Structures are given as C-alpha cells and as structure tokens.
Length: 50
Image 1 (cartoon, one colour):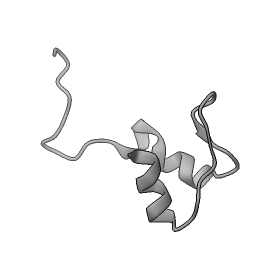
Image 2 (cartoon, rainbow, N blue to C red; image 1 turned 135 degrees about the vertical axis):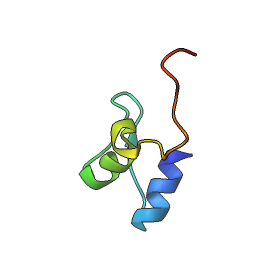
Image 3 (cartoon, rainbow, N blue to C red; image 1 turned 90 degrees about the horizontal axis):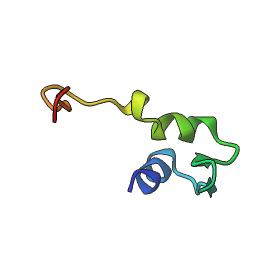
C-alpha cells in the first residue's frame, strides 16, 4: 500500500527491490517510504507498552 501511495504522489512508476526493501535509483521515493520520515500525526501514536 505504501509503495502504491508513493508512486501516486510522485506521479511515476517505482522499481522496488524486495531484497533491500528500497526503490531502485529514487531517493525521493525512499524518503517517502521510511517509517521515521512518515511519522504519526497526533493523537495517533504507538504507546511505549502495548
């Protein structure tokens, strides 16, 4: 789902490498897919103890 969303937002096809879990040759797409860069919007957070 995240890969399709990144492709839609960027307006281009993405070539994904499942071994490295990276988009090949597209740092902008890789930034969109990193968890740390997406983050959660308040109040939607994962509690420390689940």
